[in-house]
Length: 478
Image 1 (cartoon, rainbow, N blue to C red):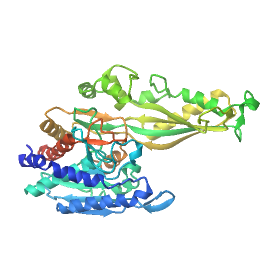
Image 2: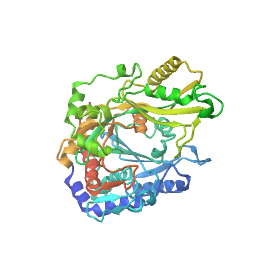
Image 3: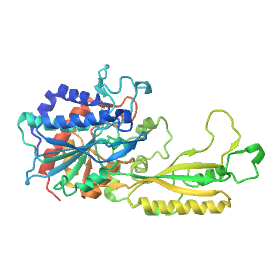
Image 4: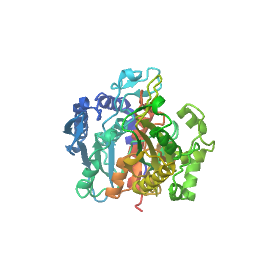
């Protein structure tokens, strides 16, 4: 179904208004991880309720429990839910976004005040501000779509249910419980879901994302004497925990990124012909990743292997040692207890439980080989399952057509190396196909200083979200 041209014209004619809406949102410092900002997170929820209400959508805040922040028990930020349309002849789309943001201070290295939307004075069209791309820009994009249809008196082609949360940047605490509690309530009747909370792979090619790696985070503690020791007095006489830990950590992954834990490699699903074709079609050059990491340290110069290493295959990264001397200068201490930290990015077939069983067995067996009198503990501190959707689902077909219509080019089909845990919660609990439809570019700097959203992406992104609704209405359900 072709997008109504009146909608597209309205978006072009109201760019300044839409940027002003984003400006108002960015000016609310809705940092969910700092108790001093807690009132502002609620203020952002109120802003969304007011914005939706002004567009004729009955929206409400729903409490989802309490949590501890800075030693105090406080209410979790509410979720904001709303619905427009209930026509049984139309498809019903569930839309998710988040209204909280990462911390930001001007002195961290920002060019401008982070909680003021600043249009780049150099004329590039970049809109600087915390939350501009993650995730207030996309959320405002959805509001822009609704506004255009309301003001033009146009009927939306699908029914829409919204849910916006205020804890995504702090772990989405209790959101899974809310989803489960409303499975047969608010969420009932949803046909599919769209999340706009990720980014293009580069700066010029739109994409559709159909997979996310999961993550298991581990801590390996080796403990020995009951106190730190002087190396001049005790060196060469005791089993040193740091020596044991270094040996264990060296046996987890090779310098070329190969995971050395038996059983991991064997679980990776074989690459299908469809997958191979999608990876080969991605618009990506090795210079893109060289620029992103600040040098040529890639394991391979093969583009497809690099992309699969980043998106499709598991990886193991060593993150740090706790309990060791790390300050400037010299200190001849033998630590009595040290803790190594590492994570494994999970892919389909590598579950949190199954992977942990392999990890614990391997490290325990390797520790026994050392013959040390020290003590070993291996702990999974956090686990998140991987997620993958069917990229041939009618929702993806609709997004593909909308992308071609707005950008004039075929989208890349990507999988993210990182994790968006709420995606799996919605997919598993509600049994929905979830589409990740990014608005921003790969260089937007989400979570970083000088986070930005390009004006062209904001405006074309609004057109994309609206066009997707029309294409979704026209696609035949599988």
